Each structure stands twice: as structure tokens, then as C-alpha cells.
View (cartoon, rainbow, N blue to C red):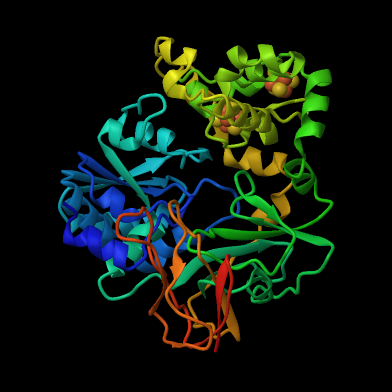
Length: 445
Ligand code: SF4
Ligand code: SF4
């Protein structure tokens, strides 16, 4: 049976604020030995989790204690990069007043925040292949998720912290109403976006390219990185299957650098992107045997945007291989690679971690990295917001209001059935419902 805390999280619409938006009440309903805070924030240029720790460390730790209590976890660990000395001191002082919480400094590598890496770094346990942190006795939440969880009793999720950076005048981390348009968020960083620009929604490695600036901020938006459309990173990320397949087929020399630096391979999992690349040479009927090496890919993009000396796209080959295999009914659970014996972490793993400073240079982002970003929690009062009905993993929420209804900030405007996986969506401003369609609810102030 769900605990009061889990019910509160569902009612308040709390979802993972640092990833795909998995409903947090499910994690709070599970049993774990260790609760881990993912404060690694390993995507270059993003700073919102560190800013939250800087300004709200106690609230975040309150959320961690609630999670520990609900899950039965005997210890709490905050995984944060060693380079954030001031925030580590702050956390250590706050943790000293609490029971069984320790701060674990991490190296500055990418992807330190991948759950498989984080669980290994903080507990020295490995998650079974294809498994979840819970399979290694851990429940993992990111900083903002726990910040929201601590406030859930009184405050539903109607605001989002995110970093706006890149080709903007004043890079900044802001607290914004959920549903604010990207264009408005970018203007708050001092720049009006135009057709020469593209924005990466999320980090430069795992974020998606957006050219429509009327997309709204959701509960999972972690950052907006504005870049010229002709920036090499935008060009690389925009590659489509015919292009990367054709180039990969002719240019991959099987050097295996992509595999040698792959974070999942280095942890001992049966993922070998250079073998997935071989499938480009075969006809589809022969492909699945080799494609299976893509099944444990976490889509971190390191192989594509950092490791490959030929500028090829093994990550996208893995993603498309996984889709092909799914269509044929092959998943990790019924794959041949599941039978392979576990290797354990690679003896050279420590020496093959990818330093973020090198990654930033390779991505052509050094000039942005050097900029200091500001922080503001000033209240933003937009003319309207658009609240996506699907901001979380699970069933999309269904509107419970109609056009013309007056709503107050914090009121539920869309909900999911009790038996469905998902959470409600709340109004993020006071106003009137001006439009409802299959994708969003618009509220005008
Ligand atoms: S690093 Fe590039 S060239 Fe080398 S095996 Fe991987 S995809 Fe092929
Ligand atoms: S994207 Fe590449 S480097 Fe990352 S897990 Fe997948 S194969 Fe490995």
C-alpha cells in the first residue's frame, strides 16, 4: 500500500525533474537500502542543480529524509562533483545535523550522473544488466525532484528551475512557471531568438534540438542551450538515419574507440557500439545477432560526440538498432547477450573516464563554459502558459477543466485515472482557460 508520502507526491504532481519524468511516487513506494541524490549534473553548461543546492540545501535534504523514511533506506548519499567545494561544505554542515546522510564527492567526468555510474561510484555495487537501481538496493532521485518532494505537502509542482545559456546575452539559471514558452525564457536571458538559432532542450549530450521556440517549459526541462543553427554540435545532432547509416557504412574502420570509452562497457556490460556499427554492412535479415550489442546503450552520446575519431554516429546506430529489435520482439531479457557472463568493471575504467573539460572543448562549447551564469528566483508573470498533458512517463493527463474556466495557480487542470501510471497537471498561473487541444491546455492571465 502506498505511504502518505507517496500519495502526497502523486497529488502534487512530482516527477523526476532531471530526466524523462518518471512519477516519483512509484520510487517512494519501493523498498531500498540506500537513497541516493543525483547531484552530479554531468551535462556541460547546466547549473540548476548546483544553484538549488547553493540556495536550498536544507529543503533538498528534507526531501531526501522523507524518501529514506518512505523507502526504509538506512542511509542517504549525495553524489556531487568534487569541484563544487563550496556546495560540498554547505551539504556537509547540513548533513551533520541529520542522521545517516553522507556526501560522496565524484570526479568531474561524463556521464557521472548516469544512474548505473552513480550507483557504482557511490556504493561500489553494480546494477544487474537491464535492471534498475532498486536491483542494487538503491533508489535514486535528482536534486530538484527532492526539493519538490519536500514541498509537496503544501505546494504542487508549478515551477521549474532551468539554465538558459549559450548564445544569449546574460546566461542565467531561472525559476520559471511550467508552461512558459521557450522564446520567453530565452528573452529573460537577454536575447530574442531568431531563425538563425536553434535551442537544445536539455544538455548538449542528451538534449534534443528544438527550432520551434513556441515549445513550452515542462516539469523535466533542465536547460535551454541556444546555439547558431550552423554550430557543429547542432549539425551532428540533427543527422538522420539515411545520412549516418550511409557515412558509417563507408567510413567506420572498426578502431573500437567508441567501445573503449563507452561508460556502460567500462562498467562491464555487454555493450559494444563498434560491433553495432558492423550491422550497417549487413542486410537486415542478418543484422539482429550483431545488433544485440546495442541493447544496453544508455544513449549518453559519448561515442558519437566525443570518442569517434571519424565523426560517425554509433549512438544513433544503437538507438535505431534497439528500435529494429523491439519491432522484432527482441529485448535484453530474451536476447543472446543476456547469456554472456558479466565482466565486472574494466581494470582501466578509472583512467578512461571522460573529463568534462575535454568534452566541452570537443563539443566546441568552451566559450560558453567560461561564462559565469546568474541565478534568479524572481516571480515571472507571463501573459499565458501552455501546459503539456504529457510531461511524465505514463498515461497522458486528461483535461478536467473546459475553455472559459477560471483557474488559480496550483489547481488541478488535468489528471490521470487512479489505476494509471502518471500524475496530475496543475495551473502554473492564475487566469482563464483559453484553449484545450490534444497536446496542451492554455491559460491566459
Ligand atoms: S570509434 Fe568510430 S570509426 Fe571507430 S569503431 Fe567506433 S564508429 Fe567505427
Ligand atoms: S551512447 Fe555510445 S557511449 Fe553511450 S552508452 Fe550508448 S554506446 Fe555507450
